[in-house]
Length: 473
Image 1 (tube, one colour):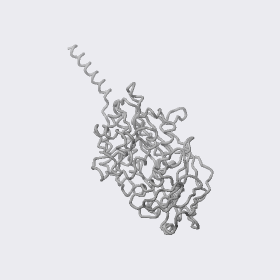
Image 2 (cartoon, one colour):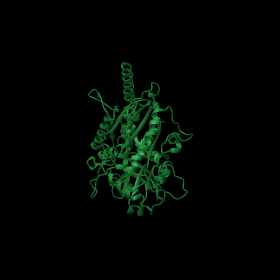
Image 3 (cartoon, one colour):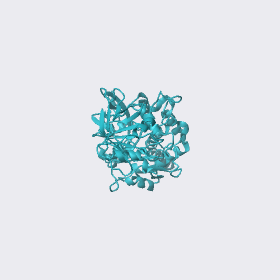
Image 4 (tube, one colour):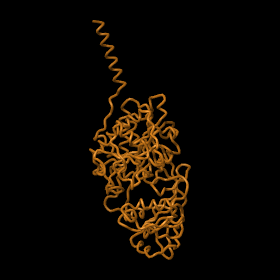
């Protein structure tokens, strides 16, 4: 009798110990996703505008979720205590008055006849080149184009990457909305992030260190008719007075789950998204809030759900950082500061998966599939697919999505960094209509759930992704 009792006690102790070591894994549930999405994309969050208190409030919510999911803080030290938030100092330049474009005797003002999307400085000048099919770009020219198709971005990039001093884009159905948005806000100018001067890149919204980027100017319909009468060689001048730089800030949220393996814990898997969107526009009639449900509350929710799952299970072998960046929409300010002040040496970051716009299915792929930007650039996507990820190549290569999210700045530093998405080019992109009611909850729940197994494999393996030959940014 006593012997049987002893065996029973030992068995119970072993079972209790085993249960404690293997906590039941959390699962991805639609109810949790709806709660997190609603917190980030409701009207009270006011569109999480870049460099605003609303963006910071979004960060505070995400930080509270990380704490709830047993993810340790890895942001700034405040009052002697480590926190989740990282304050990013941003010094912005602005024009004192709308800049003016002169071409010969013609004059246009930002916000009226022209919309200056970005400028490399207070002035820009050069001879006008009216671009025709087959023409080579003249170095230092200000090039005038009529976009020929439905993807003006690709045509613009081709011009700007070939030595133009500036680009003037004619009015068209494809550019009219961009004119309206750019005309309603100050032109982008170089900014200082921390101690480094950065200029918005011509190929993406992500700012780059050093150099002067060409100006980009959209024309109104009336201005386009005037420009169509101009000839090559006319003198082009964009000028304005820049105010004294104004210091501001944006916010990152950083959490960490330290690895358990003595060797592999030195290797970091970085899971990221951007938490800002376009804020509000009081000039709009009716709805004035850019809720940004798909862009990118959906990506932030994916990062939070990965934190929930990984934080509930056994500690991964590798260290995992969960980061939501501020001010991606303005030029990637948050990710640039993160790269200046990484929590670990950049050489220790094995891979970065950015989650962006996964709130709806993309009809260009199968309903249960996600896609990875720059799929052919590295072996990361194919390897994740081998381990169960329903992930395929980006079906929209002409959109250059690889260079249009936070991952790009990290990739330029050598980190294999790519973005997971299912954006199907829907009409609500950067519109006030990107709201919670447009989210496909079944798709989003399935999409995040489908990445859990592959991510768990990645954070517990010794696989190190590499760039394919000739594909490193």
